[in-house]
Length: 544
Image (cartoon, rainbow, N blue to C red):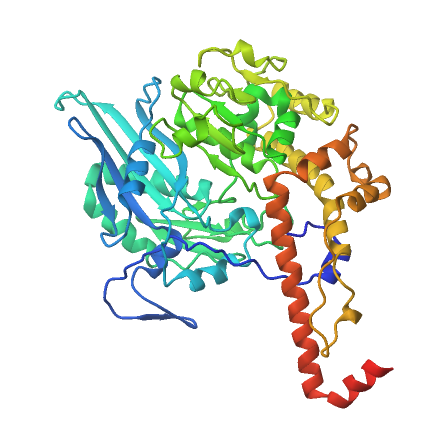
């Protein structure tokens, strides 16, 4: 993944292909019989388009005898294992004491059963190829996007109507799927399954989610307009909103399909945003304790996105419960906490996870006009219950000096009642510039590992990349380090040393190495083709 402004990298590694995923992705495993439909050069079966967006839609209700249960899966031929159904059941309902009366939306993520294959994998991979790394389909996990309704109903024995409509997908399009649920769920709760069937049929007529294309998506009598970003887009920009006024039949324009409201999510702890950025960058074990699944999932997603355009390569669970299949794995005290970010709401976790090194306590999220008070990082021993005061509980000492300028800028925006969209943009740009300043020296060094094009010969095997040498890289920081693009002072060297041992570096470097290897192989193949077409000229060039 090359960042913007890296001309020297672009010259050496142009049009690098995206690494193929080793694990299959979600769409329909068993296709119903039906006529093939031709779309461009592709032959698509019924439900193929639906499967490009969603694996299935589930309705989860509460039964007095069985507890949570999956009542409906649509399309009916969609496959879910018993373990996956159990995960969906428990993750689709709040497990906190917050009540959550009315309608609540949140997101969760769970492991996909092993060994699943699909005939659509190659078809979908070609659309994933041009997507930014942080928007690619998740090879080993599903996302669940939930619309939960809880209202009083005296006709029911329990006294409450409780039900969730859940979209199961491989795509991390958080904003898009939450917006989609706002259209589908209220209609479903009123008209039941016929409405769900109609919505699925609408989705099966959509174009596939192709990066770079503006898509018109009719659903339930409403027309959505979205654009899937590409890896070549300039980070932090959108190319959709400018043309919105010219659309006469579009009902809803979504400028972003994935961005969460960063400032609102971080408002309870925004005095520590730079430290949180370091913790996420280094893949530290983090737990977010929040009063509701909505605040839990939004905060975890905000943390994961704060190192964009880097992809967060460790596990993260926007909403995690005691019934999760990984509960024992993630809460054991026999070993150090794993590299994972958990979002929890159950007070039980305050005791179960009190040995974790970094805990973020989120209270009720403030509105954009509320002014947060400066709060110091608290010691972990002060966290005894989930009712503890909001804040960051950690013994971590940041490598970089605190950036007071961004804090003053955000505080000024609060005092001047700056729109939340503007505050979000300021914070997102801050994180983007910080991440780019950090990763550009790595990009520059890794580009230098690429052999020169003149070393590629049709008479030899493709040349190998030079290995990554940590000390050699550290020496480059003296003259070409982050100080060239960032005003922040501090122990950048120490930060890099810790990062090079993290899952985020491992995932980033694997991707870059595969891209560069594919580029070398392509250049070698091109040299072979040139030799076949013009052997005399090429041979003469070799011996001169």
